[in-house]
Image (cartoon, rainbow, N blue to C red; front, side):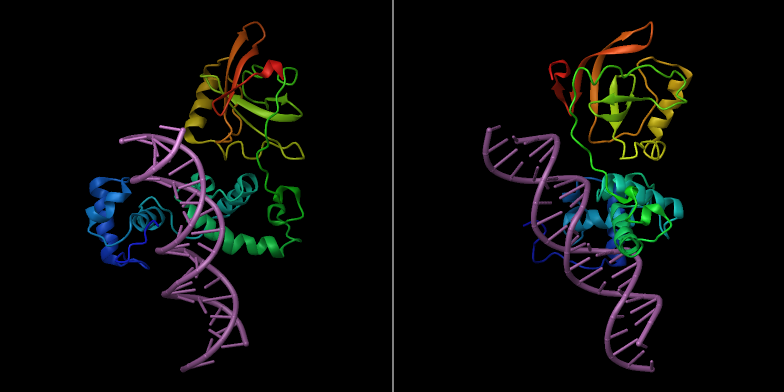
Length: 258
DNA sequence: AAATTATACAACCGCCGCATT
DNA sequence: CAATGCGGCGGTTGTATAATT
């Protein structure tokens, strides 16, 4: 079993141990955690070292109470992603997955249980938005995947299209990598537009607005685990494309024969 | 003031996915 | 293809501190 050596220390870390670990990371950098205990001279398992660094010693960690906007974002992302704390924390600069998980379990679960009359709809289990929206399998057919390109050159309106029976927001970058998300039962897909974009995506979107490429759609939320890519023949006249190939998670879908 | 209970969060554990051999 | 190791994740527990009785 991992980390079960009898001589390995457990429990709270001492200042001395913290110092040794910090010096080790500063010298060798993050990674190669299995080497850290010997390198640092610590009688700890590598997992304990890694956890101590990622959840506590890392200087990038943000301390203090969660701000209102952070709490709101946690709730919204949890509604979308469920208990995928690392993904949620990834959208909260300086916050660790452990922090987010602890906060949610100690602060928000209590409210969730006790607040059916909560005015905040995201804390009220009786509202639809309280539900966790889980990714659904895609079923595509030729007829349901007619057009995904063009439509708005200035990115100032929503670009959606109909895939199968769902309205799914789609985005594509210059490499024809297309991302999409599912709407909730109220057909709302907009709320996390900006929240779900990282700096690279924002930069890309702004760059795209200045130099329109017809194979690019208005940027939409990205589900990081459900990404598809396509190759298309583009009709330059009307900016509408004909789908040639569609890949979902690396698997080719024969969209014209379904 | 002491005992008890509740809370916050640090830390551990087992499992899983991926890369390498 | 199977075995192995590494790194990471989420669930859960442990413990220090605060609040309450």
